[in-house]
Length: 345
Image (cartoon, rainbow, N blue to C red):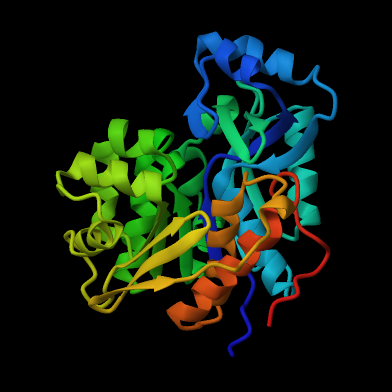
């Protein structure tokens, strides 16, 4: 198994500080939230952030979907450190300092674009039972600038150093031009570009930038809800997840040397993946429902585990097994956190 080198994995996205707290149905109703959803904060949610931090047992964790995934990949690999590079924008403030410290502790090579016009982004994770409703206030994360960061020679060198790229769909709302630049680089150099559907609203309201990037996507991740929304928006006229995976695989693709792989997770149900021209089901690790503490970060963890095996050039089945393992660990803990070492063989 080739040992991964430094900066072999490149991630770019919205670095957010997760503020998670257990809330009740009244809290969700007050702010018009669904129990299980991801949305961008609007004006009506301003008070939510002030209110959630007053709850007892508030936990702060370094978050943001892509950053979570590269951090999990690094944790799965353990050594060497700095296998993963991460780009994103933060503010010059206390929350920004926390994110820097947390990235360092996770041994991720985070190169943040720092600006002082907007504060560091936050994501409120409103937990009720096994559900989590995420409200992201992007703030600084929304200020990422291609020409001020990605295009700089010292940063672009790190992009060129990588062999596997992962960007969550959430970043389409911030800098589609940055995503395209990285995706084209991967495609032209026969490297692996991975993306995530991330949330139903991406397929609905950011369809144009999403479909501009799709021809460059070698591996596409998503969950069952996101897959169904994507299928509806694309006019696939089916709600059969295997059929959606097949149709997604067959969308136009630039680099024909790699057949697109589509991987859809379904919570406790089998993960669906395209293997060559077949669609295969992969059962997840059994878990007692009572052991589930927090499903927040399960999808990010799955991708992180998957990427850890992918950069070590493992076959698809192994990548999925690593993804299932990582997700299984994460859902037994609060936030996207993990024990000191993985126990994965």
